[in-house]
Length: 85
Image 1 (cartoon, rainbow, N blue to C red):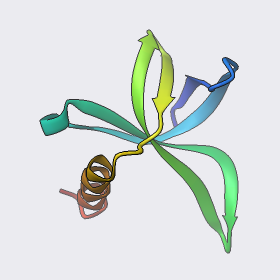
Image 2 (image 1 turned 180 degrees about the horizontal axis):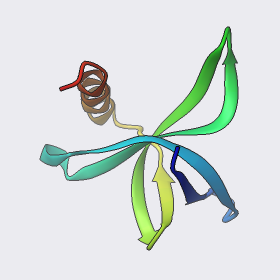
Image 3 (image 1 turned 90 degrees about the horizontal axis):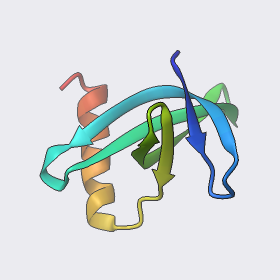
């Protein structure tokens, strides 16, 4: 799995696993699904979904998804990825 470096809110840098990334053209935003290697119980892995902005080459800033309309579009895009669309 590809590793990327993200900048945390406190300014620290963290290397994480890139699970998937995708863009949603009609809102002109990019999103990322990443893992920090944490478990979510019962053999499941915890993943994070966030808007992503590349601050400098190879260094990414994550932006929380707070707008329900955008979150609905993100969930739809993830469904399409899982279904192979």
